[in-house]
Image (cartoon, rainbow over all chains, first blue to last red; front, side):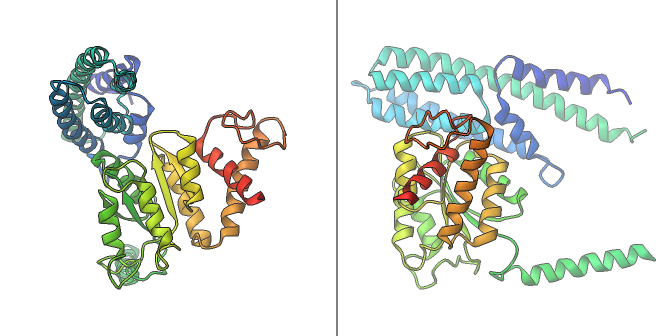
Length: 150
Length: 216
């Protein structure tokens, strides 16, 4: 049976997230943990990820306004950010986290600030594209249940 | 009708299952997961539930010790009377680290029998060493995979983690598995980048170190 155009669109959008390097195989592993008994697992994790990371972004922003910069604390926050991003599979965001931590270790404040801006951009892109994908996936699920299997 | 019979049998099994639920000899492992990251707690919880384990997830070492009743009379028994069969803890946590939690558990005469596994997103050899020396069964690199959990579960179900000999056998076996994949070199150098390991798997390294230690 041929896939409906909507399902094909969903699959394509999902693949783009990987092709563009936004997500890595950890995300696939999370998807594999989802089943009928836990049909919203991935979206739950996504929500938790946003909660975790938005708090950390605020903390880091506050820290970056301090003078002198406390690289220890900054590194601590970014360690948590990196951890959550790793567990989620946020590949590009994770890369920015690592870079930020390197700048912390080098005591390079400018590098930290520059990287943080880049990180926020990547993070915003990820959020936007994930939201679009989940919305489409939800739409597809609704149309699936509306029409009985042939 | 067969259908009615099936339904009856199914519900009977469920009832029996529930009755046996709080027995420590239940086939289900009860795992205490300790991690300050909510994302990680949710993931590990899911991994464990898929592997048919009961899970209690707490956010700190302090909460873990409270749950284990280290400060109370009932050791290794949680609030709901379930014995803890395995503790999985993150290494880096604010306040009490996973390492400190591990130490406290191994220092306790009532809790030391519980196998402890340490998880970390950082692959630092001194960290791995320290944990294994302190008595951790295993050191897992995050993100933890379903295979890791399944392997742990099999290991715990076999020997309850009490038999140190069995621990060595399991770790040595895994080392042999890796050895058979690449060149049959018997040398186990104390070197992380040993050509023996096809990949830099920390669990392979941990088994290598365990083997070295056991030789002393």
